[in-house]
Length: 483
Image (cartoon, rainbow, N blue to C red; front, side, top):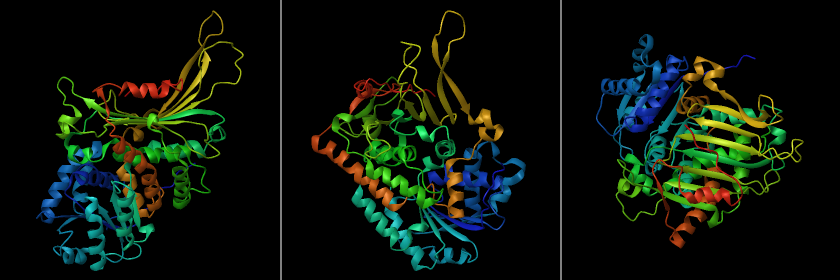
């Protein structure tokens, strides 16, 4: 079967915050890679917009430097960089004033897709939406892209949604979560709904439990001021891990359609049980030789913000009642790894007697070395009786799919092109964001009311000891985190 790439229409993409860190590291290099792949039509343009004074040549120099540093191995091959830079322009603009808006209006063309990327603080989203409307820069087919955080609680998320809804329909708003753009996350849907082998077993009758791990080796670094006001719960669980949970647990949508998929994800969030305090472990990394502690990095010796969280939760619906989901994420851990593991139940009866624990495990690796591994039980080679061992059927995308998988599209590349195509499947809907906060808020409010203090854990470890006990109480163990 030959895959079909949906063509991209010509576009004007305006990046508010066009000289910021996200634009430099992800958005601009991602667009360059799509240009190299032939997915940027000849008459498409990218317009950087920011407060600083810069002309078009200055911005092109900025873009060139970003591409050379973060564009990957395709950077500057065959002289393509010059062609890409010709499509760049810059407008010095004030999000809360009038500076630059008339200049931008003169640049915009009526016969192409208009997309506006809000790569700025959420406090500016409403101002930008208002200015775009006032200056006639948008129409019914225009799209806006907004980055997380989508609020810091339910009230602020609702306010943010109201600000955007005053000027844009829900079908025009693309709330981006880069985790949903990862190749393996999308492959999760293909594995579930494209294979007869798995979907009949994807329920509480056959699944013992599910683990979702997102482990990082880095600390908060330069994000300390932001992170200390958010913590792992707001920064990772409420959005990234919640999205992975939804894709794992949702019912099959009627078709692969944006609203059909997002309807099923919303049902999962609304079916989540409240989490008991003893089913949550919060942690904070301690200092080690050559590395500061969390409190030292954020500059607050009394900070109670968690850099690690592990939790056990349940979903009250027909498919998953009684099956626990274990989530964990943290910074300064032993290895960088993002992984989802479905642990199937043991056989009801083994003809081999007491042969040990030989459950099947399906593990989906998001990073690094994206791929899928299925653990199966076989006979250990050699004489001496029937000795069973577990072995992995391991497929890394780089090995199975060849050179293209060694340098796959970055999540931002895929998601930005989906914006231009008008495909919202991999973007969060407003009611989905609000439902996630409605579940999250009571947990955070409970910590504050009780005055909970995170447990310290050693940098470079696998996290707090209490997280091991969280599973040990259920006679289970975390899958080992490995790079």
